[in-house]
Amino acid sequence: MTTRRSVVLAVLVALLVAPFIAWQGATGDERVAVSPLAPRGIVVVGDSITARYNDKPGDADQGWWSITGDHFHATVTRYAQSGSGYLRPGHSCTGDTFIDRPKAYSGPAPSLLIVEGGRNDWATCQDGRFVTASDGVIDHAVDRYLDTLQTFLPKSTRIIVLGPPWGPRDPQNQKRVTAIIAAQAKLHGIQFVSTRGALTADRVVDGVHPNRNGSLAIARRVIAALDPR
Image (cartoon, one colour):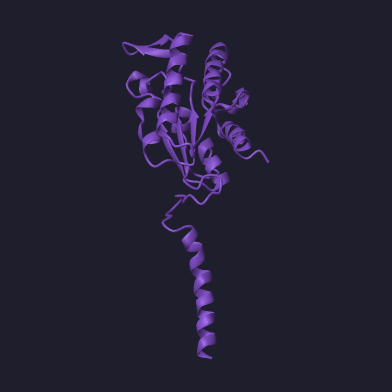
């Protein structure tokens, strides 16, 4: 009888403890990386389309990266700054560029690193002012950053480059910058995910930044690329 009670007790304890093992250490809305797709988590490097949004499921300002993380049950860590890019420093030329965030590529290696950017790279900064950047200058900045990622990250980290999520404004620069980024991704053998058409006029709040539907549209592109079933 004692043995039987011990077995029953052990089974009950296992059933109670198992859920906490899967989520141990989680507090609030923090996620623990248990995703088959990204067991070591997802890192996102980006601009304001990543930086200005939150991690509150269902919220109007929930970020595309948060929606993606929810879908894959993965931890998402951001290194993002408004106004920044491969070339242009953020915060109106007082901040940094993607390559200036070494924690994104020199810390613990994630399963997946997504680069979201390029919308700001039509221009560079000179004396605190925006000056239109040449194709060659943009190309060099993208090339240098992708080289850096491939140098520091292990081959086990999957790198994804998003085409710049671009609203209806400035279509000429959209085509120019997107083509440069797509070509560099191909040259480096990195998967490029197009976001063309994701940010239509009804999916942005100011012609540039996504509303809820815009963030969902970007997330759908990313999710489809990562899990094309």
